[in-house]
Image (cartoon, rainbow, N blue to C red; front, side):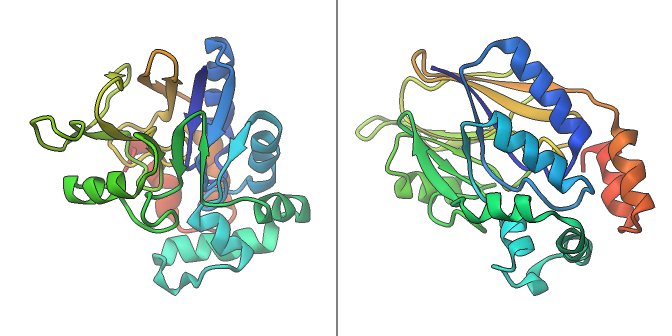
Length: 246
């Protein structure tokens, strides 16, 4: 099965529309969303409507849970907390109903799905080999997809009994992974707020039969997302960072 994996949309409708257009052209069979549909941006309902309509699987992320009131936002950055409060005051009930039905982890076609990590699906950022090792130990599946860090990357380690160490790297547009051996954690990167130095929206193409994955980036009209953020009175950093991918 050929799958498109997306994550961390963060109410960025222009980025989501661009990614979905690219996904449609790729003719994948399913779309999996790893959570954080909401937060930071100012079009929560439109993004949630598209995800509900187009995605075969959707997880709930920490920002989604915060909007639902399920997380204490005192641990959020100031800008993130302000965005959560704005979203709570502007989101529709249909979106909240959709999110209430979701979980932060799951499994599909033999692939573990986690918003953040296998050992902490809500909060843990997987950015080091040590964290990845612990996550691969906690994942019942050999391959796992993760989000949350907003960085397109992968970690892998050899199968039990084989020599070698856990390795990982950021992944650029077009990077191809052979997932046929060993354990893997793969992050598609963020649709709506990339933090890996590339401002283009990110998604991952996964082939579960061929056991391969390819990273993709898609340009979009950043102004269409950034200008409304500023107009809504949200912190300027939330708009400015979209231009730099930081």
